Image 1 (cartoon, rainbow, N blue to C red):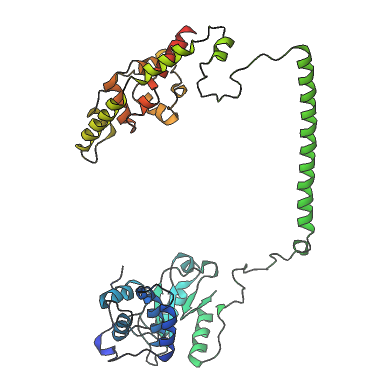
Image 2: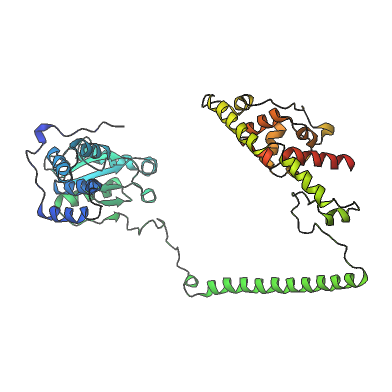
Length: 406
């Protein structure tokens, strides 16, 4: 990154004053911002002042901008030296910025650069007549029309050494010049035989109509097929119902990964004796009392205190070791087949993967966790207390018993 400094004192004007037009313009600009926020106008005001000063910013002009916007001078100086669109030394009447990045270089910017060096001199040098100065810059965004230069506010594209020489001659002589492509291209159209978008069918609606009609016909065909399929399936269902009634399905519509409710209907469907409601309530209350509310609050406070004593970059395992004991794991699932731990409400694919990485593959492993192990796993998975709230251990015990019986 180049260091940007103010021009030497020898070329600095002794004073600066805003033009009446800029004064009026500034009043309108400041009105755009809330009271006390006039500093927001610093960039547009510097740009306007640069235009008034022959496309560069003298030190006195920067000081005047700072005074008018009630800003410290250093703040305005920082802006002027940061943005390369602000010129800190005098430039020519025609300030040429030549793009030298890859697309322009591949298309001949070196030839344009040689013309600049021969006719004007080194970068930043202003010709004796004050007409020209130049600078090589990064991409100016006209890659399709490379090579190109920006002269003051306008782009000149599709240059060759010869066309650029002519352009400089016309500017020096005060003749009118063509802005944009010097080959007559419009925007970024192809350079060769231009046939783009010349087919009349693109504009008479025939292609759009044919496209629309094709999709409408396809939609009608699919709707007819769906109707025929629905009729056939309905007739088959009617015949089946007349021969044999459908068996009861108390769990119909239940999500596959969700544990079926242990309700009388499900017990009866499985040929088991329904659970006594009073006994069910007592079992639920017993499970809830595994960790009482007071004990849970005390345990969470204890965990928080232990974690706060650890360094900020402590690993998940370090945090878990500070509050509990890691449960024993297996090197591989028994019988080379792990249980689907996602059947436990609260364990998704991510948590199942993390548990497997700890060597936890089976329901009976989770069912055997004690308090220290529950605390360890909860902190390791970054949600202390959730294992109790979702009752993983009881769910795992029920699933392990069910799988054993089956």
